Amino acid sequence: MNKLKLTIYLSSLSMLMIFITAFASKKKAISPPNIIVFLVDDMGLMDTSVPFLTDENGKAISYPLNKFYTTPNMEILARQGIRFANFYAHSVCSPSRTSILTGQNSARHGVTNWIRSEENNKTEFGPEDWNWKGLTKNSVTLPKLLQQNNYKTIHVGKAHFGPFNSEGEDPLNLGFDINIGGSSIGQPGSYLGTEAFGHTGGNKTRAVPGLEKYHGQDIFLTEALTLEANAAITLAKEEGKPFFLNMAHYAVHAPFYSDPRFAEKYKDSGMPEKAQAYATLIEGIDKSLGDIMQHVKKLGLGENTLILFLGDNGSDAPLPIENDYSSSSPLKGKKGNHWEGGMRVPFIAAWVSPNASAPNQLKLPIAQNTIQGQLGTIIDMFPTLTWLVDIPNPEGHSIDGFPLQTQLNAKQNTNRDELFLNHFPHGDHRSNYFSSLVKSDWKVVYHYSVKGEPIYELFNLKTDPFERENLAESNPTQLKMMMEVLSAEMTAKKAQYPEKDGKVLELVMPQ
Image (cartoon, rainbow, N blue to C red; front, side):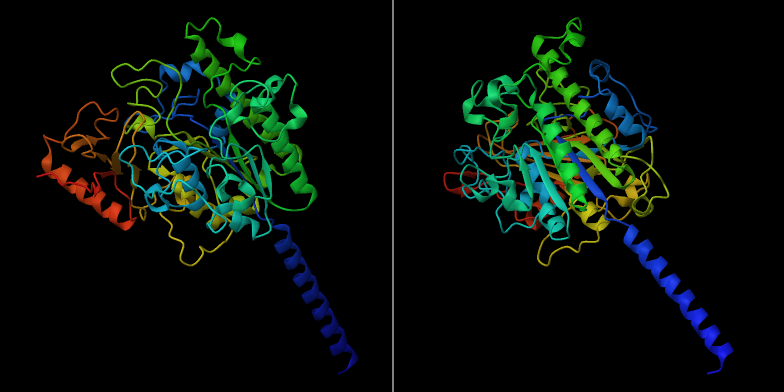
């Protein structure tokens, strides 16, 4: 090779190496996204100043309850992201929380009631072998999959994945690297640091574990958990790992302690004392949301951090019930009910610092200041996040949800089925022994024949969103069609039925 050819060859080789190095650096710079699931216990669709309900044109409507609550950080999040007008969860907590971690409907994973820590609460006619032990070390869970992909997985707050002395009692068994305050309990013994969060005052059987550094201090539980969450985020950054934060506040679940930081604001509201206390709990979680978002930005992680804000079931706010309307009004019902107020929850998705050109935001663009009218569910979160992080679904693990990436960009996902099954084969709640199915604009509710004949309810949610008119008798054709879909869903998910006198009470189809 002559000198000229050698020079050209070396020059070309040098350029190639520069290109390869630049490409490798670019690839290396695209870090996996950080993920925050901000889950509020018992927060319903109307427990916020952000309006979620819309008119027939998709425009937000503010109702009286929206004007009572103060949630400025939710308002900010809604402006920089998208909120869903029709986002469904199960009507009680443990089923929803298990569905978030597994991507499965409660009828499939079998956690169909809230888990009582001390014993099996199947209730009188409930199925004998429902999954009251909850998740186990062998369960396929979202944090476990993320952990296996080098994520720092953090649980903060309420867990409620299994009873006392079960594997599911400890979030560390389910794929979390860090557990702050999570155990079997479904509510805090106390919200006060001066009562050691239940260890020295309040309900000692539901004392929040850990957090000893705050015992005796004049600090509210919501604030203590927020401080610990931010410290865990800092630790993940120092370790050079992406993080998954399951920020699962005990608020706004009973007992309805008043958060003294916000109490003065509601004294002249004219609302009952417990309702005022509930409003302070709401404002406390909103402050937590703002504090965590600011901390993420301060660490320079905002453009690469996705936040999903939601509740786990309908509102349980201590407001009077009048003709079945209460704290979810104008939606009918509340936590534990079979109506929409029992299972419609707030859902907002946003990047902490929106930047359309950021690498992960290019992959998952999220429309801003937009309301998505198409149905979404808690079951969709698992496939959405595994898609975002490029994690394949484990072999043999059934998924009932749909990835939300199309809907988060304010488009319609024509490939999803728009079904949501809420299966509650138990008693001792506001609505007992029922299964309901939403299919696009229609909803059917089947009440099992534990005491008498079965009862059917049928609603057109498009023309009657507040469920005032039961069409079961006047539209038998639609009722039969919906019952057939309900039956197919129950069969596909191997749902368990209530039992009476040794007999399984399967669906009775209408004549």
